[in-house]
Image 1 (cartoon, rainbow, N blue to C red):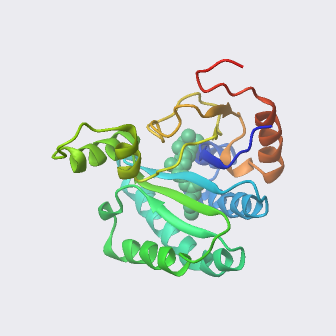
Image 2 (cartoon, rainbow, N blue to C red; image 1 turned 90 degrees about the vertical axis):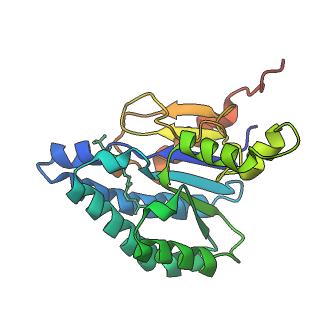
Length: 225
Ligand code: FPP
């Protein structure tokens, strides 16, 4: 049976969820943050899940209206500060992937503080993709390696990427079937699951169902059975 050691999620559908209820889009992000907490807590209670990587803000999300971007920045800051005791209680290590230098000094400081204070936790690692784009991640890694005397190997690349771990199970909520520049390198052999459920309606029960299906998939990694 497959083990979902590394689960990655594209959390899509916050805006549509809010609009469907006649609310402002940002209400959907607020509700989405509650689901981040519920899914993280659930994953931290399942021993086989070692890593949960969540796409929270992409390098392309800066194109959104200024007020929505500002709201998301504030929400992230508040969320991380408020969640620190919960991370510690659940033995969850927090890390950010992406180019966080693009954020305000204040948000960068909150991110670093929560990373440092949870560094000793050895249960689940919750990795938030922040100002993250897979192409940007690969370019940054290649630029660091370009002066290497030897030919670049897969191992060298893997070590330089922000996320150094292959994805087992990649889920996208919200009905679209695309990867949107998320963990392209690490998902080379990930199993992809798409659900129409909008992120604010996603539940640990739904995740459990997907994991159950994933465990039964035959993964061949390019080989034969
Ligand atoms: C996509 O929904 C979601 C985002 C761009 C942001 C994800 C943010 C959250 C889940 C909440 C904040 C996260 C944390 C960790 C506190 P969308 O706005 O593209 O939805 P739409 O496709 O319906 O417009």
